Image (cartoon, rainbow, N blue to C red; front, top):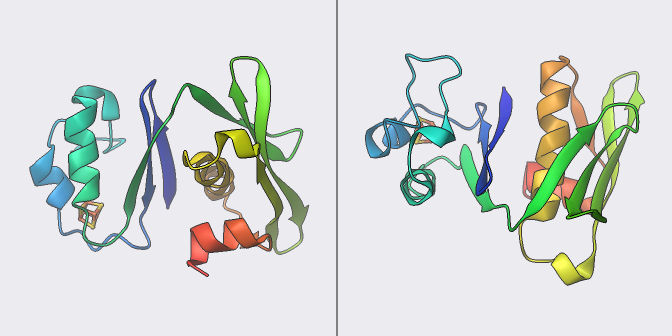
Length: 152
Ligand code: SF4
């Protein structure tokens, strides 16, 4: 399972395939990470710094966190993409094609002016989460999506 949680400050992505339930997050920030609750992550329940600290102590890499930097990332079902906007300006896009064996992410791009802020990662995660919710596999072919999802 892959889930993306966002508020005004941060975006937290959880990859259950990597989680080995060490519960560091639960003990570090029980207000935000509570396995007795559904959904078990609620990042609005604790101060951002506390959530960030708990995520940074996740030993498996299942949790990752980025600051939003006033950039909004949205999933666009009809456009088969996710988009990033700063105010009304389109500054990033991640695109996929629905193939018979899954969603093929073939292009991820962020305006270089906005680089280094984790925006491309958020764009990829937004598609991965939706694919997961639709029970579809993600096949990353663009180099950035491959790096985010497979580490290569
Ligand atoms: S700290 Fe990481 S590995 Fe441990 S339960 Fe939380 S998400 Fe899973």
